[in-house]
Amino acid sequence: MRTLTTTTWMNDDLDWPHVGQVFRLEGERRIGGQKTVEVVYGITSLSRDEADVDRLLDFNRAHWGIENGRHHTRDETLREDRCRVRKGNAPRVLASLRNVGVYLLRGMGGSSAAAATRELSAHPRKALDPLHAPGSTSE
Image 1 (cartoon, rainbow, N blue to C red):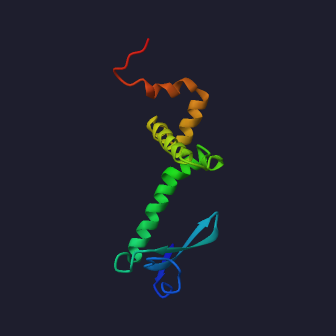
Image 2: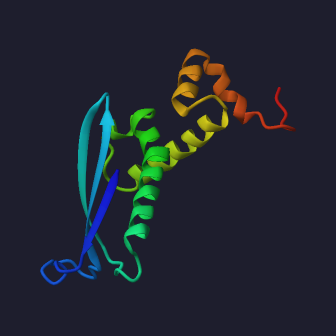
């Protein structure tokens, strides 16, 4: 169960340009019979006319769809969070390369990028298969 509450009464007190509303999202779930509650606070520049509670919930779902679909894979399968590169363009370049890697791994079929990674670890020559496009020639 999720409950989202919004308010505008804090807008004047926040030193945040263009604040439209503040919200509190409370989610409840059961894991192994034990109830857990997570509370998340957020700020948006969208007014209540631009984004009612249902629209804010849609935005939240979309955010987690991206997080679970791409970022989680990069974090867990490719260990992106362990990367120590932080300066210049290198972090963006590496993120782009990881996105290409995830795309290629998912294109291999299988159940997940993690499963494809395990398969390639066991059979490294399979990593070259996507590079042999139909109509290409090799010696």
